[in-house]
Length: 475
Image 1 (cartoon, rainbow, N blue to C red):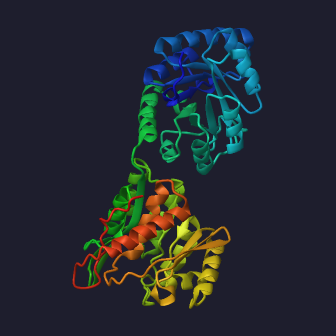
Image 2: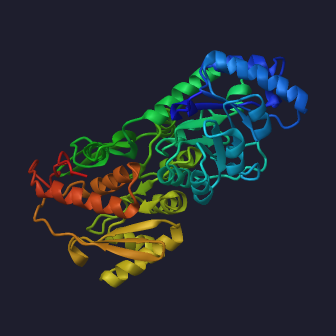
């Protein structure tokens, strides 16, 4: 059978642990009817005679449904029954030896747990990689957990198809979005189910959307600005302009315009959790931007859900203190933000007054910006972008991460309409992180975007008006 990476979309691995009242043959046929695209026969305790009989039966069944059939580990048996190929682990048969035994036309997959193993398998002629465990699993006790970042790194740097394996379920599979995988390999997510055919069909639909999704996704968690210059509205416009699909979870409704805020109506923590559940369980965000959250219970609710869904690329704009020095949220909320939310951040984007609060020091020059960023980064184990502002160094921002720093120099734009600049910058950073750019590139492109959006010189409202979010940066 000719091998195509599309065959790896939904890769099923058999396991006798879930037989119950059915035979393995019956289970496999239900999975084939449900739409599996690849089957690996995995037997650890069956004797050679029965293993061969079973393998021949399942091979015939897979041929009926035109699905590739491979054997786990056993190169000799794969050769003897003329299976479509074999999958080998790091401690199993040598890859080059397996190729010599099976020939160039057979499929050989290899397990990999890091980039070095993946590159070695590719170099030695593997047809695809099984990478995992991407989630903790009880099926294989000795499996090593592989981070999302490692999975993505392998997909980016190795030019053969990659299948994610390990602990994948109907509920968590969506978290693999944006990794670059060609499919998933599962055991219990199919064979442990009462209705195997239905479970297979539902899982295949999810994986198909995940693998073929054409637009990156981002979520903003913030308050609504009915005048459209800041908050949720600015975030959504920014994300769209920077080519990501934007979703939102609203923390509060505000009555405001360019002259000020006249009313705030907070949502309940329970309703905020419902919004986050709705987003994360359907269209999983590849980045999350968090703006102003004024109540400690809302902050705790956000932190809980971010951890529950293993959110990544979290950009926190710690809206605590205005550039005038006025506090925007109370001390209890500030303490809660520090304790629960900042340790989850990928990057925090404070202005000078906010950085002073987080670092507990006064900032009056660039050296003190660097020191404050160092303190914040070490304390919360995240990257920090301290926004310079005109009072310190014109439009120059400082990115601090991994015990080093980088200045992003900007040109001051003589535009008094700066409503929502903090929201816009953090949302733009989240957009580029969602698209797979590095943190440095994301900050650079976000600054370019906001500078040119300000330079468009939009002039709306009687007070400090919004910028032109509709400006689209050519990146």
